[in-house]
Structures are given as C-alpha cells and as structure tokens.
Length: 322
Image 1 (cartoon, one colour):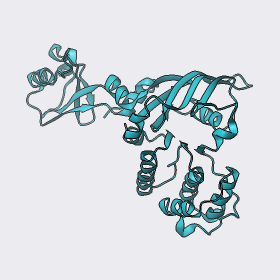
Image 2 (spheres, one colour; image 1 turned 60 degrees about the vertical axis):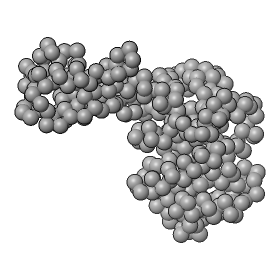
Image 3 (cartoon, one colour; image 1 turned 90 degrees about the vertical axis):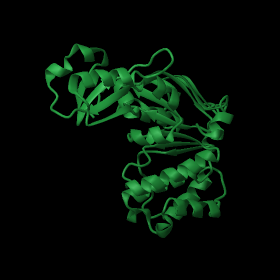
Image 4 (cartoon, one colour; image 1 turned 135 degrees about the horizontal axis):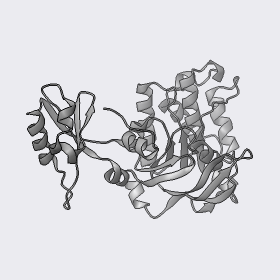
C-alpha cells in the first residue's frame, strides 16, 4: 500500500452501495454490488468479460443510469452533484473517439474547456512528453496509430488534473515497453495523491500495481479487500519439484502423498502445502514424503499462487497447469 493510501485509510474516494443495473431486455449487469475505493489507492476492478465492469464504469462516467443503488464520490452524491464530481473525475474508456481533424494538442485544450478549466499549456506539454505523443502533437488524430490514440485517451483523462482516474483497459494495443513507461507515469501520479481505479485483463500488472482489488463475476461481487489480504487468504502455497525419472500414476496415488494432493504440472509435480497454528508451512514434511516416493528431486522450490490463479478460482474459470 502506498503511503498516501495508508494516511487516507479512513477516507473513501468512491463508495458504491447496493448498485444494481437491469437493462430493458432483462439482463442483470450488476446485482447489489457494494465496495469502497480508499482515497489515494491504486485499485483493481477485475472480472471476466460480461462480469459488469464496463457497466459499472459507465455508471461512474454518467453514460448509464443504475436501476437502484448509490455512489458517493469524495463524500458527495455522484448522481445529485454530477457537475461537481465530473470536474474531479477522469475516465479512460475502451472506445476511441476523436474528431479525425483535431490534433492531440487541440483535443487536450478542448477537453480542458469541457471541464471548465483553462488549458494549462505546461501540463499539456508534460502529458504529451510523458505519454510519448510530443512528436505527433500537431498531426491530425486520424494519422495516429491505435496505441497512440490509446495514450491520447489517457492524456485526455488527466488534462484537468482529476483527483480520481478510471482506467478502463488503458494498455490494450500498447506494446510492452510503452506499457511499462505508462505504468511508471501512473505510479508517479498515484504517489502524488491521485486515486486510480484500473480494469485490465493483464492480471500480472494488476498484482504488481494495485494495493486494493475487487472482483466481479456475472454482475456480483465475489471479493473486495486489500490485495495483500486477498493473496494471504486465498493464494495457496505448494512445493514444486522435478523428479529424476518419469512420474508414474501409481506413485501419485501413494498413500504417503495423499494429504499433499499431488498433481502433475508442466515440468514436474506439485504438492499442496498447509500452515500450522503458528503460520509455518509444512515444507519439510512434503519434501520428505516426495523423497520417499520419487527419490531426491533434480529441482525443487516453494511457489505461491499468483493473482491469476486466485482470479480463476473465484470466477469458476478453472485453473492453470503450470
């Protein structure tokens, strides 16, 4: 957790309460969703396609109205004080829509005006530089690549210096190196006090960047807590090892391994670990059982599930084999 997040632990940037959205065709996109986003946090909103993430973000951006529920934004009612909230919220949508004959510099100046803010030329220039658009700042947006347009969306969301930024799949179509530099910039903004709400399918990025997480499945909330707490509670630890010879089915069925639930994975086998009352993993017992059945391993290490493993289990989408 960032220092800012710790200092503001009792303050909420967003408080979503019993949010429900049922479309006219009967589809229930959100079903009684409640969670809070601490001010100053880097918050991941995750879920498979169709989980309700885009609907929730569209509600925050005032594109969709909820069927019922409430949202408080920096202590204000989001639906009753929309103008006040909009000036302090920046949203990076999935869809890219610019006038093809405006330049990136034009887009940022116009967007400032739409938020009732006089264009800050110094800040606009910094955004163009940091998002690697400076060399293209005076080209028509129709001449930009998809990745450049995606970065322009980020600049557009930041141009009025909002206190909360919603990033909806901001790195889709952005190459690995640019993605890394974009996240470095977003970390700086977060450390300076901006709350960031991120949706992404790159779960390794979410685990690395975010200090809080909420996970949706079929419109319902299945988890919402600090990232560290979620991983400590749900990420299983296991002993991975590669025996010297081929692993036979009879060996995996050996009674000495039963309590470790052995399973094949790519390159070896895994033995599930457990903690005793003092929180210590039973690595020694698992290793001794493995040696008794397979002999000394060629390689071994203790591994822990990552966010993707936890996500797949919470959303009932199966697990990985390696």
